[in-house]
Image 1: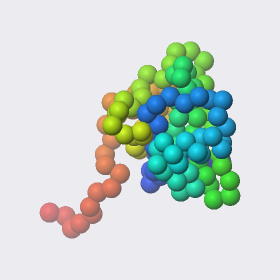
Image 2: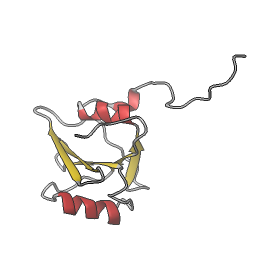
Image 3: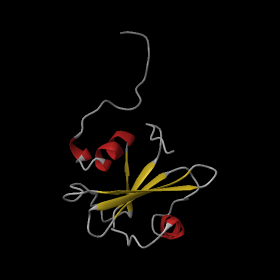
Length: 120
């Protein structure tokens, strides 16, 4: 089972992907296009060309997980549009909102880390 934790590195591929690719094809895409190691424990998120499905690829140390989510209605409303980079980094709570079909760009949450010191 994949558990999404706040400390996980999550990369979202900017360009849509041909979903005829399986685990090996997506892992190769991670290496070549996204310039990231698919064995690193990073979660890689890909969107179909139609925008109705997404896939999450993860390696847990023993093997790959490939999760597929298809919306029954509509399309995923938000997707990164940064044309300078092949991927965009998002936070765990943003991935959870994205998986539900929401728009994570409007979420406001406190920073994941803050300095703890003596009271002022």
